[in-house]
Structure formats: structure tokens, C-alpha cells
Length: 451
Image (cartoon, rainbow, N blue to C red; front, side, top):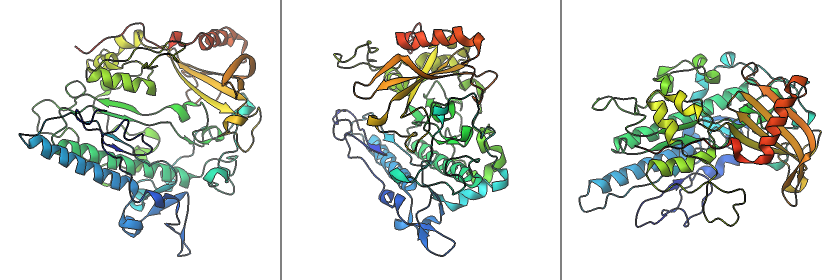
């Protein structure tokens, strides 16, 4: 980005400064302590634990990474607001990228969040089993000690038993902690005077399995591992507070005062859904974020990538969600869904047809099978596991190792694989053709622009 035209600070993980950012990235000073012995144990000593609820004041530097990141961003807002109020200063647009670490492992978070999720309120995954209809290569030896990971529990080393509820409790508590920090950011944005002219997107890079199908973490093509929150706020279009109202757009909610834990475990809370019409069920992908943001700020959206994009300087594989945003805000979501993309795609590798210690994260040299997966607009989840050449990075569609097909309308948890059912053979063949042909199902039939 051109630093003479706009401010582009970044807070979070890795970066490519100075090529994409005009301000040196911020990394929380407490971040290096994430894998140190800072977790208090019952023996009175400090340990490095997967589960690590802490008294923040006793932690190194008296804080945690996500709290420090939020504090830093609030200072950026104050600085930008001060600059905007100076008559001689140019009112430049800004782009701020930030990332929270929780609920990433290890689960080090303020211990008071545990109170929101008493163990008796935390249910085990309803499908904490490995179905006989599912291919054997889906199984993984999750959470081996290599690669810096830690065994969940001596009785749960390969997740042959349900995921321990205290681990799920920690995940929920960590998520609520992160949610509160996000609330601080939004409230600070409004306090600085930017709520009425700032586009906000909130995403995650992957989902998380909490024992479903005897799986933990993100190492699969299951929807629990690939589905993410994808939220966009556009001032003047998605506002839920009427113009002129004295109510704040982004009120900071105290999780310890407003909600009971039993209403929020496993997404049962509707507290933030003040208008259901602002939820769309069309298929979207992370590749759609960039063209959406460029479209919203009226910058040229790069063209879609051709089949061979090696000779193209700039292109995208996603599409702008502006038509969906507008139709959803106007309660016309059915209109956009009819012309929208017909499938969303993911892929995940395996080193062998049977589980082995590196099944969840094989190195490139050990990848011999690739699972290409699509969730379709007509309610199916299809995956083709085929041979993969780890030297040329090419798939072999004729070398089929396994297939999966789940009917999401009747099997939303993806427990029963019906790929081998005779009546489904034709559908599987159609979906395989879609894979081999490329992006026929990927792009909408038409596109719209902001009015």
C-alpha cells in the first residue's frame, strides 16, 4: 500500500512488511510466553499446559497477548481520531488488519471465564464416534507429542473416547474471552468516531473439531473443521441501529452480567441476532473476502483467474459478496441465492490409506492422497480421495482411494456416508465431473455492483 495515500497498520501473526503495510506490525510483548511454564499447577509450581486458566495480573508483564493487541489497537484509534480532528491534517482512509490468538491452543486465558461454563453444562459432542460407513483414511492419530503438540489426556491419546469436557470448557471460555476483546475493539472504534464510515469484516481461517467423529482440531474436510464465521458490517447497509438513534452501534456487552453459559454452549445463544434477515445461507469462501472489500470501497475488482493463471499478473478466485449483502439487508436473500455459486471447495491431504502418526499433518514429501471436497447449494457434501503426486503437485482422478457423500438435510452432522449407496452413484459421477472440469459451480451466473 502507498503510505502517502493511506494508513495500513497490522496486528497479529506473520506479515510482509513493508511490501503490504505502511506501519511496522505490532506483536504483543507477552506472545513469547505462550509456550513457557506459566500455568499454575496444583503442586504450587508453574507448568506448560494445554489448559491454562490464569490470573492475568500474575502473568509475565501482567497481561496476555490478545489483551495487549486490543489495547494497542485502541491507541491507534485514538491517534487516528486526533489526526482527523486537526483541520490541517489530510483525512486519509485507513486499513487495519488484526488477529486474535484465542481460541487457538494453548488455552491460556483469564480464569474468570471458566465461571461461564461449569462442567455440568458442557455436553460432549453428539457424534463422538467413528462411523463404519466412513473411509478408514479419515482417522488420524491426533495430538501426538511430536511437532510441539501435547497429548490431550492419557485416556484420549488417539481420541478413542469422547473429547474431555474440561478441554471443551476451555475452548468455550477462550472463545468468549476473545469475543469480549473484539467487543472492546468495536466499542473503541465507535468512541473514536469511526463507526459510521468503517467497513468491518470478521473471519476465521478454519473451524475446530471438539471430538466429533473422534477428531480434534482442524485436520479434515468435515464441515466442523472448515466452516467459519464470516461477518461483514457495511455502514448504511447492514446497520441495525436506526440513523439518529442515541443507542450505540457497538455496545460493549459484559459476558458476566448478560448471559448464562447454558444458553451459549454449542451456538445455542441468539443474543446477537437482533435481525434474522441479516443472516444469509448462500455459500461463501475466504477467497471472496478480497473482491468483496475492494468492491465495497469502489476499487477495481481484479478479474477472475483463468484455468492457467501463471501468466497473469493479478487475478482472484473469489467473487464479490456485495449482491448478497444488499439483498440480505433488503430481505431479498432468496433473490441472490438463486444466482449464486453452487458449491464451496476445500481440500486436505493424507499420507496413507490407514491412520499413522503423521496423518493429520503430513509433510509434502509424505502426501500420497488428496481429499478434494465440495459442499453444494443443493445440500450435499461430497469428497473424492485420489492419488497425489507430491513432486508435481498433481492429482490422479483415476486413482480413487475413497469417496464420501453426506446428505446434509437429513444428516447435518455428517455421520452416514452414502457414497456407496447405488442410488447415489449418478450424483457422485456428476460431482466428480465438476471437480475435473474446474470452476463451473464456483462462480455466480451474474454479478451486481453497489448502487
